[in-house]
Length: 155
Image (tube, rainbow, N blue to C red; front, side):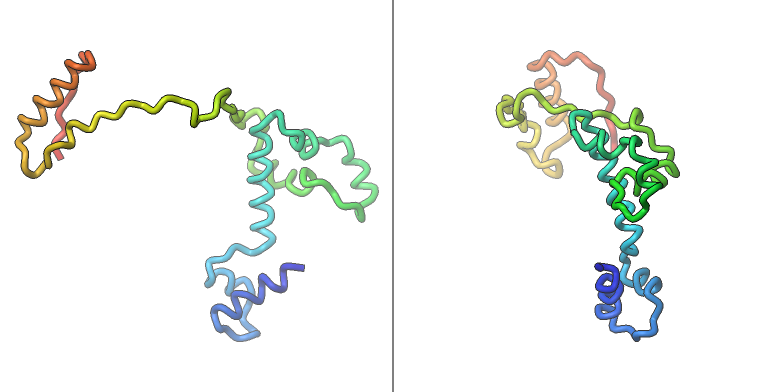
Protein backbone atom coordinates (compact mmCIF):
# COMPACT_ATOMS: atom_id res chain seq x y z
CA UNK A 1 0.00 0.00 0.00
CA UNK A 2 2.87 2.40 0.75
CA UNK A 3 5.01 1.34 -2.20
CA UNK A 4 3.23 3.49 -4.84
CA UNK A 5 3.42 6.56 -2.59
CA UNK A 6 7.07 5.89 -1.77
CA UNK A 7 7.85 5.40 -5.44
CA UNK A 8 6.01 8.56 -6.49
CA UNK A 9 7.61 10.86 -3.88
CA UNK A 10 11.10 10.98 -5.49
CA UNK A 11 9.45 11.63 -8.84
CA UNK A 12 7.73 14.69 -7.43
CA UNK A 13 10.64 15.98 -5.39
CA UNK A 14 13.20 15.56 -8.18
CA UNK A 15 10.79 16.91 -10.82
CA UNK A 16 11.43 14.00 -13.16
CA UNK A 17 9.47 12.45 -15.98
CA UNK A 18 6.89 9.74 -15.36
CA UNK A 19 8.92 7.33 -17.47
CA UNK A 20 12.02 7.64 -15.26
CA UNK A 21 12.94 4.32 -13.64
CA UNK A 22 11.97 4.20 -9.97
CA UNK A 23 15.25 2.59 -8.89
CA UNK A 24 17.32 5.40 -10.41
CA UNK A 25 15.08 7.99 -8.73
CA UNK A 26 15.70 6.34 -5.37
CA UNK A 27 19.44 6.55 -6.00
CA UNK A 28 19.19 10.23 -6.96
CA UNK A 29 17.09 11.01 -3.88
CA UNK A 30 19.45 9.00 -1.63
CA UNK A 31 16.49 6.90 -0.50
CA UNK A 32 16.66 3.21 0.18
CA UNK A 33 13.96 1.19 -1.63
CA UNK A 34 11.08 0.45 0.69
CA UNK A 35 11.48 -3.34 0.67
CA UNK A 36 15.16 -3.04 1.68
CA UNK A 37 14.30 -0.46 4.32
CA UNK A 38 11.67 -2.77 5.80
CA UNK A 39 14.12 -5.67 5.90
CA UNK A 40 16.79 -3.49 7.54
CA UNK A 41 14.42 -2.14 10.20
CA UNK A 42 13.08 -5.63 10.93
CA UNK A 43 16.62 -6.98 11.40
CA UNK A 44 17.57 -4.04 13.65
CA UNK A 45 14.44 -4.65 15.71
CA UNK A 46 15.39 -8.31 16.08
CA UNK A 47 18.87 -7.31 17.27
CA UNK A 48 17.42 -4.90 19.79
CA UNK A 49 14.88 -7.36 21.11
CA UNK A 50 17.39 -10.20 21.37
CA UNK A 51 19.63 -8.05 23.60
CA UNK A 52 16.97 -8.02 26.32
CA UNK A 53 16.39 -11.60 27.43
CA UNK A 54 13.50 -10.61 29.68
CA UNK A 55 11.55 -9.28 26.70
CA UNK A 56 8.65 -11.58 25.86
CA UNK A 57 8.99 -10.83 22.15
CA UNK A 58 12.27 -12.79 22.00
CA UNK A 59 10.52 -16.13 22.31
CA UNK A 60 7.80 -15.07 19.86
CA UNK A 61 10.20 -13.81 17.20
CA UNK A 62 12.72 -16.64 17.32
CA UNK A 63 10.22 -19.45 17.95
CA UNK A 64 10.34 -22.18 15.27
CA UNK A 65 7.42 -24.26 16.53
CA UNK A 66 4.93 -23.25 13.86
CA UNK A 67 7.16 -23.51 10.81
CA UNK A 68 5.21 -26.44 9.36
CA UNK A 69 1.90 -24.64 9.92
CA UNK A 70 2.95 -21.56 7.94
CA UNK A 71 4.39 -23.70 5.14
CA UNK A 72 1.11 -25.62 4.96
CA UNK A 73 -1.04 -22.44 4.99
CA UNK A 74 0.88 -19.76 3.07
CA UNK A 75 -2.09 -17.40 3.11
CA UNK A 76 -1.69 -16.94 6.87
CA UNK A 77 0.30 -13.93 8.04
CA UNK A 78 3.68 -15.11 9.30
CA UNK A 79 5.33 -13.70 12.42
CA UNK A 80 8.29 -11.35 12.08
CA UNK A 81 10.78 -14.13 12.77
CA UNK A 82 9.78 -15.97 9.60
CA UNK A 83 10.26 -12.87 7.48
CA UNK A 84 13.74 -12.02 8.78
CA UNK A 85 15.05 -15.57 9.22
CA UNK A 86 16.74 -15.66 5.80
CA UNK A 87 18.31 -12.21 6.29
CA UNK A 88 19.60 -13.11 9.75
CA UNK A 89 20.92 -16.43 8.44
CA UNK A 90 22.71 -14.60 5.59
CA UNK A 91 24.70 -12.48 8.06
CA UNK A 92 25.37 -15.48 10.36
CA UNK A 93 23.36 -14.00 13.24
CA UNK A 94 23.39 -15.92 16.50
CA UNK A 95 21.56 -14.78 19.62
CA UNK A 96 24.50 -15.81 21.78
CA UNK A 97 26.66 -13.18 20.05
CA UNK A 98 24.47 -10.28 21.19
CA UNK A 99 25.57 -8.66 24.44
CA UNK A 100 22.71 -8.52 26.92
CA UNK A 101 21.35 -5.17 28.01
CA UNK A 102 21.94 -4.55 31.70
CA UNK A 103 19.48 -2.22 33.35
CA UNK A 104 21.05 -0.30 36.23
CA UNK A 105 19.62 -1.07 39.66
CA UNK A 106 19.38 2.63 40.58
CA UNK A 107 18.16 5.46 38.37
CA UNK A 108 21.03 7.58 37.04
CA UNK A 109 19.68 10.84 38.46
CA UNK A 110 20.23 9.47 41.98
CA UNK A 111 23.99 9.02 41.46
CA UNK A 112 26.27 11.60 42.99
CA UNK A 113 27.63 14.27 40.68
CA UNK A 114 31.33 13.74 39.91
CA UNK A 115 33.73 16.42 41.07
CA UNK A 116 35.15 18.41 38.20
CA UNK A 117 38.29 20.45 38.63
CA UNK A 118 38.70 23.15 35.99
CA UNK A 119 41.56 24.95 37.65
CA UNK A 120 43.89 24.33 34.69
CA UNK A 121 41.56 26.33 32.46
CA UNK A 122 42.01 29.56 34.43
CA UNK A 123 44.77 30.74 32.13
CA UNK A 124 44.48 31.06 28.38
CA UNK A 125 46.94 28.77 26.64
CA UNK A 126 48.05 31.55 24.30
CA UNK A 127 48.83 33.94 27.19
CA UNK A 128 50.45 31.69 29.79
CA UNK A 129 53.81 29.98 29.62
CA UNK A 130 54.04 26.18 29.71
CA UNK A 131 55.80 26.33 33.07
CA UNK A 132 52.64 27.75 34.68
CA UNK A 133 50.59 24.85 33.36
CA UNK A 134 53.20 22.33 34.46
CA UNK A 135 53.36 23.73 37.99
CA UNK A 136 49.56 23.82 38.27
CA UNK A 137 49.38 20.27 36.97
CA UNK A 138 52.00 19.05 39.43
CA UNK A 139 50.08 20.76 42.26
CA UNK A 140 46.95 18.86 41.20
CA UNK A 141 48.89 15.60 41.08
CA UNK A 142 50.14 16.23 44.60
CA UNK A 143 46.65 17.19 45.80
CA UNK A 144 45.05 14.02 44.39
CA UNK A 145 48.05 11.80 45.22
CA UNK A 146 48.72 10.87 41.61
CA UNK A 147 52.11 9.29 41.25
CA UNK A 148 51.91 8.16 37.62
CA UNK A 149 54.41 9.15 34.99
CA UNK A 150 53.14 11.53 32.37
CA UNK A 151 54.62 12.22 28.97
CA UNK A 152 54.47 15.54 27.27
CA UNK A 153 52.65 15.61 23.93
CA UNK A 154 53.56 18.46 21.63
CA UNK A 155 51.03 19.43 18.93
